[in-house]
Length: 219
Image (cartoon, one colour):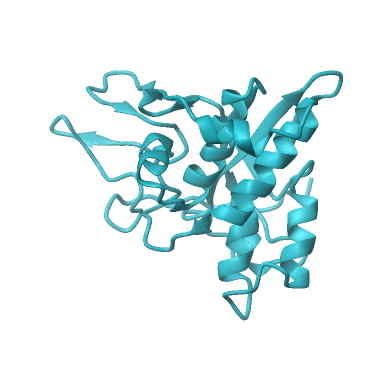
């Protein structure tokens, strides 16, 4: 299993998938476990850093998409299922009808979102997004929905095997070293800058000034 702190052993993943045989079955068992055992923590800055080593050591499974989807990826890898994080940004409102899963305007400065996918033999790369299920639980109006709420149930069903493509993928890179930079970053999903050899806070567009705008092309 790989996070920003290297490789760790995760015995619980063997328990999660003990009745699974195929890649699809293993990934689905892990997906269900992540949805049931994690929560979206609104106090986490940005999308989180994906420090799954600390999550597993402390047994604190709160976070945002960069944490919860990274947990899925790490657990899948630990049982031999190839998986990866994909970093990008939401660029449009949700056509599935979820206010929490799309932009509310053309300002995408806080629209960054990490997703995940796994590789199933005989099928190829399969998209998943357990973190967005937990986002619907917390943020979809009226908020703090129950796990058996119809909106949550429907999102949970859809996001194993599909993504809504109001989102633009950037890359799958980890532990990135940018040109002329002195520091390594966990992923490349936000604008990055340094001044005086010191990295600016990429997770705060209000203090590190940048604006991302997304508009639909008419051509």
